[in-house]
Length: 42
Image (cartoon, rainbow, N blue to C red; front, side):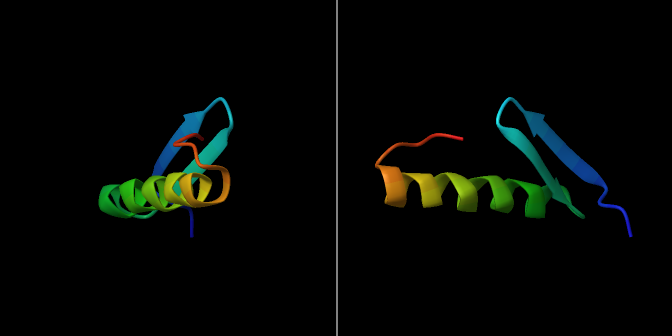
């Protein structure tokens, strides 16, 4: 099954079945960077 929503940025691509899930994916990834590297980056 193909995800309905995609966000393409310079660093890569996010995919999810719903818009809300896409937002959650982006936030989870950015919080991971904040915790690991101390920066809010993508």
